[in-house]
Image (cartoon, rainbow, N blue to C red):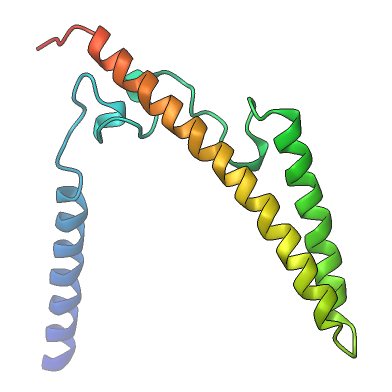
Amino acid sequence: MKSLKKSVIAVLVIGTLSMAGMAAAHPYGNRQGFCHGRGPGFGYGPCGDQYQQRGWGAVDMPEEIRAKAEEAAKLRIELRSVLSQEPLNREKAVALEGQISKLHQDIRAWHFERHLRDIEACHKEAVDQPVSK
């Protein structure tokens, strides 16, 4: 019985410390001029809603990039099919993986450029906003 009480107390202490640690993990608060209080380039906050849809389904994704994403998805299905066959066609699998990697590299480059534009817009918006106290 005594060891059960010690276990319960230990679990409660660990839980309390964990909650305190999570609360302390966000030290910035919601400061003016920063996106969602974390610094430029993150979240929603005063930077507007340019971050509403990210990833492969981004609203502002150009047709060229969207076509590359769709092609990569088709190639992944084909690659899964090749990998599930016996005997394994290693050359075809390597070629498909290379094509998928090239498409993903192009898509990631577009995402990164867009992210840089968003950060620059956030910086500009943060500079243009008056700081209120």
